[in-house]
Image 1: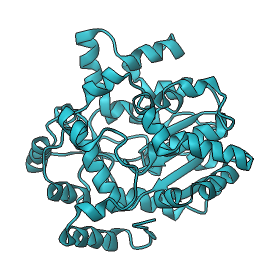
Image 2 (image 1 turned 180 degrees about the horizontal axis):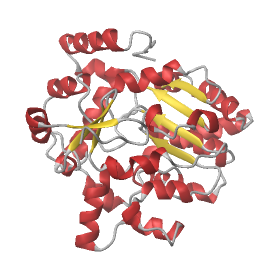
Image 3 (image 1 turned 180 degrees about the vertical axis):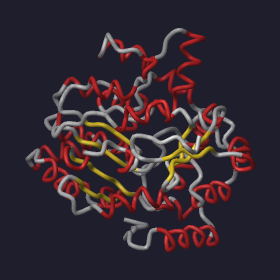
Image 4 (image 1 turned 135 degrees about the vertical axis):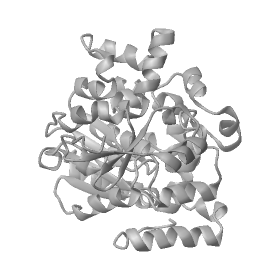
Length: 356
């Protein structure tokens, strides 16, 4: 597998032996039933399903009217998707398309690499899946076996807003020459807690370990979407590119209207103050939480089928808190010191903010 070379120029390295067994033990959900891989250089971490779609993603045709919302996982992605889509398409809050699930309006570009094996199993046992049904509606000639989500993105009505957790180097090579990217960074303390909850909540990963174990996995960059540090550093280095806007989650929380004005200027949408207030209100955490199951692109029952009920009932669902500084209630001084050392070693240039 290590000799396999992708369109992006990366080579593939299998996760093996003790490391693989540890991850299967801590994440007993379906996502670890198949093999796990790293892409070199930089060690980008994926399920092996990524290899089925990586070249399709890298060679995906982009347009100047596209906007990519890019983040590491649990860094404000869903919020930013709604902010950007509403700013572009629904500033007066009268667009009937706003009633469609967020996942339908702003597809998750590489989601097939995380869900394809489970999708195949579902289609074999049940003969249908909501995402497959959606694809057949928007693109009747498409074959779900070629991947659902990238084809949803391809068929999306222009101007398109697309979500990704991929780093810049795994996106199409002409990305920053062609398309605008809204990149959101979140401080690692809050990111770790939110990512921990997500991995406990969803049955696909079903994390069963401790906070200490999750912190260790995070800072050693050996779980999905890692490495966090390289993901952020590569975007930070090109923050002056006119086609990339680098935002901090904490700034969005502290001054949503001020940050929306930056996004408005970046995208050239030229919204009025009243329209920006509409966007902020419609995309606020309470409003999005009301629409939470729809925002995940799922019906209520289907969403609950994907959740660990005990975690959902005790700690909350996909929309948990939406705050900055939750780490203050969860981390010990020793845990904070470990994370801070990781930041000092790997992210010394990033001006993280830990409260608002």
